[in-house]
Structures are given as structure tokens and as C-alpha cells.
Image 1 (cartoon, rainbow, N blue to C red):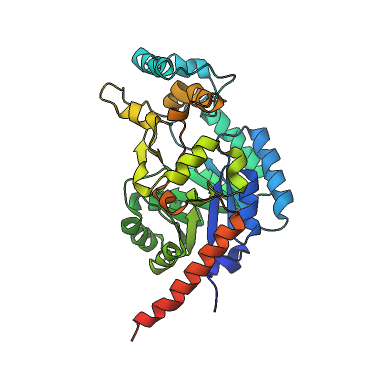
Image 2: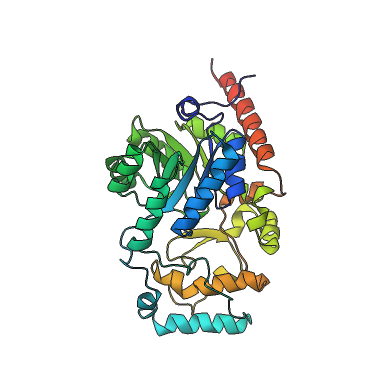
Length: 365
């Protein structure tokens, strides 16, 4: 029986059109080594860390291709100044966070949290982008925003360029920026996600994209989902939640988070702005419930929400505050109930998708 394939496989030098996004070096490398296309989420890494970690991935994958993803939202502050941001945070928001710390008896963090190590700013973004451009990474993916000058320079340096979008209205801007691939990210997706369901979104993006290849993200968990993506005109899939319960990812996974993810069904995720100021799908816990309470203030915009809660988020995991420990995850989490190696996950996806695609020919007369 023939196996899953698309033209992207020949174009990019991969075996399967499965793109895997993760914040963990070992997981990204395992995805590429298993025949997919690993993409490293480097948005919260210092430029020097990005350079080191991309070099480490290259050592692990050899000549196999892999990518890196940065979030480059417009409208961020010019400078990496925490003091300037903190001075603009309303006292009511600070008081709410202080009450949460007291209620759950959260000790202070030993250092800045993931979201407060630096301020999401034009200054940091420029340095991160330079680290990516100077590396030998094969793909530059824009998670939020796709600055034309950054896309052009990445292409000049021989890197494939890609943008994640959540609405048909975003297609013209992304194409004008010059990206060579699009990810249609549906409402089902984990972390930063949009308002349109995957089934409604993908055909519209495919039609608007013309000859530009489209990947499907949001709710992709099985080979059946991959086959459905191909039927909608996609050239492949983009998956993130699938790798959270991979063996490789466990070194970056708090054991409480792991157990919550294993127990979670598709209905146990919620979209909140309390994480970063932008819509963010995560597993429902006391954290999201506190921010949904009637007396809770509306989350601030990025990067103000980052600074408001960043140290607290770090302290929650550092000190094992079980009710508040949580993880970003898509609705596809309902399909993952055990820890398995990346290679096994990909092999099952390929086998299932191949079988379904073969069976579909039976519906033609």
C-alpha cells in the first residue's frame, strides 16, 4: 500500500507532510528524524539561546530540514524595559494578582518567569530575528505577524517562509509579505488561536491562497484528520498538541501538567486572554476559572498581561501549586491518553492516513 505523500515532500526533502511544532529541542529533532518537519518555538528565548539551540537541533538532525517559529506581533513597545511596562499596569490588576497569590499561598519565584525574562518588544524581536537569519535553519515561520522585510531577508538567505493565519482576511497581507506557505489555524488549535473552526476556515484559505501551499492546524490528532485536511485541498498538516505527551517532551513537562493533559478531553480546554493578553487555548484549571470570575479584571493587552502574570506563572510550577498548574493545548488533546515516542506517534498517523485515503476511492462510481 502506498503511504501518505504530497508535493511538499519532494519540495522540502521530507518523507511525510507532517509539520510538528514544539518548544523542546529533542522533540523538534525527533519529528524531523521520523520523517516529518520539526519546528522549534523560540519566541520566549533570548537571541543567544536561539543560536545555541538551533545549532543543537542541527547536530541532532544532520541534513534533515527543520524550522523555527517566532511571534512578531505589530504594536509592541520599542524597548525591552520592564519598568516602563509595569508603570502602566492598573493597580486593580496588580491587586487581583496579589489576591490570587494569597489565596493559593504561592511563594515568590526565584527569578523572572518565562514571560518576564524579557519584554516582548521591537528591540528583542529584532535581535531574535537576527539570530534566526544567521543560523542554518531551513524554515522561518511567523506565528503572529509576518513583517515583509523579515520575510524577504529570510528568503534571500535561502530559508522557506511560512505564516500562521486564522482568518481569510489575513491571506492577502501574508501573501503580500511574500511568504511561501500558509498554515490555516482553526479555532480548535492550542495556544494562540482564532475564532473560526478548522472545517470552515481551511477551504476558504486554500481558495484564497491560489498556488501557495496550505497546511491545516487545529484539531489534527489522527490519520483521519490528516486525510480530511488533504480532502480540503491542503498540502499537509501542522500539529502542536500531539507532541505534548511525547516521551521526548517530558523533560519540559511538569508531572502535574502531564497528568492533567492525559485526563483532559476535548471539552476540557478553554480560550483565555489571561496568559499573554492574546487569545490562548489551554486546559481548564483554577487559573482560567479565576480569570473568568465575575470580579476578575479584563486581561490586559500583550505585553502588559505578560508582565502582570509572568513571574506568578513561573512560581506556580516552581513551587508545585497544583490547582493553578496548566498547559496550552488544543481540542485534539482528547485523542492523546498516554506518553509515547515521537516516532511511534508519526508512524501511527501515517498508517491511519494512508489507509483512509486508500479507502476513500471506494466512494467513486
